[in-house]
Image (cartoon, rainbow, N blue to C red; front, side, top):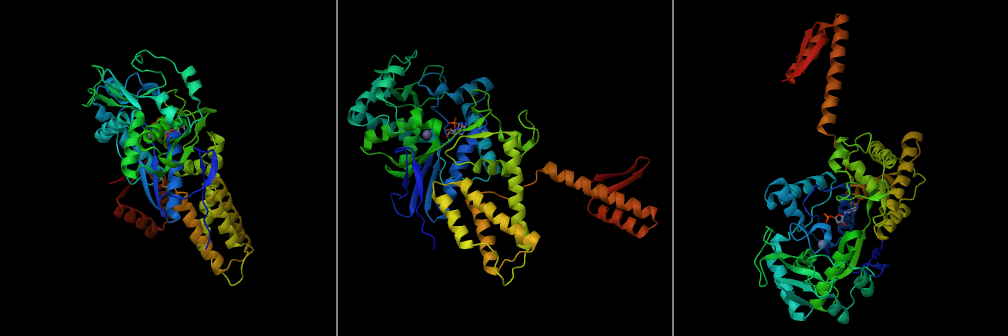
Length: 492
Ligand code: AMP
Ligand code: ZN
């Protein structure tokens, strides 16, 4: 039995720490989900695939995991600021549709893309608009604790007051003095006592259509508040893992800590895990700059970034070949290398299934190999190290298959079972699903071959064979028509 001492890099301490959940055997994990005002780009997907790996491994270790990943469908304003238009309302205005049509459309897109990437759905997927009451209750509690103030129907979190009792900046390392110095005083922020304060509730301008009644005004909640409301509701005031992309550390996650700590007097989260960014041409993939690519355009090959299509399985494999805390740059060369590696791995697994084990053991220590595989994942979910170990197994399998090296039953069983576990269950890498286009191409090629064989048979006056091919194809709904330009076929 392998002793699992899982360590995780906790962004709060900046150190690797032994993972010990609040309730032994159970894990509560909250991950910030997408703001559904546009198609998810590949950068967003990297973060969700990173947390899918973490979710899968925790489950594999036997933890009962409650995984909550929200949908942001209100309150996230342009530029992550406290002023400006709601991203969803803006899209609705431009498209001349209802905000909830925007939300529905891009939520469906998000789910379809993540399903292609073989990510497991979270246990709970709450929305901000579905938790307005909980958010209003939280604001009341923060007001009662004395860390917020109301001005003209809006409620703001008092960062300086909070910092007197607690430590604002504990996650991001930002210093309050620098924040005061650097925060821009934007128009419309004049209601705030200090520019670094952030909105818990905003009074809606007349043109702001996404609005709800509250004790302070008809308005809408601040973006940071929703995650505190939903994580507390479903995971409690103290839970194990909070995740998201690095770019959310400040202000979003810093503000989440402040809101929760202001009420409960203790930190809400034991381990903060942050996934690093996917870059394209060395720059962060982002919706706002146009430096991004949509997953579906990679799968279809219809894009101006890459020469050929890459399957979701290959793209997922590419992502997992980097550690989730490292920056990853996507390029044609890197994707091609991952594609080769993916096929080499899948081919070896298929070949192993056909091998008949013998009595003699081969030169491969499966116990040591298993230990190294688990050691990789136990070290902060190090998927590139795990994949390197999988290729050690591939080397051995290729010797067995091509050079007739021995493998005994126990080696064969361990490798067969554990490769399936690591590849499918832990890494979430599935065998490649052919697209319907690829299937159609294969069908066309197969029928053309049969037509050629039928023509050869006719030339050789082997009419039994030529008739058999025609009749059998007709039975399958494929009609052959002989004409001047050769034989054509139709599918009926
Ligand atoms: P958003 O919809 O903008 O709130 O982002 C959803 C998630 O995607 C957040 O966790 C972001 O941190 C993450 N994200 C955004 N851009 C990237 C990127 N280029 N690479 C990795 N994750 C990203
Ligand atoms: Zn969040």
